Image (cartoon, rainbow, N blue to C red; front, side, top):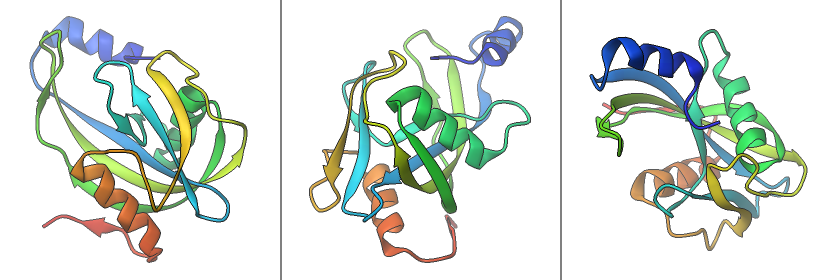
Length: 157
């Protein structure tokens, strides 16, 4: 599912104005932590961890697990929150403006083989954590934070 119905409903009222939303990033590791799950986005061709928007009233960790299942067809368990950051404002191709508070979760694979399950991505597969796919600095940083295996979440100052 690309854009949640509640966002489409809001867009009918506010047009392209800036919309503040809460999103999740799921850093999904294999059980032995040697591989990471990544998807290739259909809209820009970039490799990323699974990301998505939290539905109203949805628990953030549940949203991370749901997004992984919806986008990559695998089940995972969110272990803990590892990073919280406000992303810069962005403009989508249709002119919609948005800004996200991103909650990044360390997740562990529970079952299934990755595949592009919902049409948002063209590929979904495992990569060795020592040789991740080319990703932007934010996602590279989040993978490094996950692999540090520290109990506390990171917060930007």
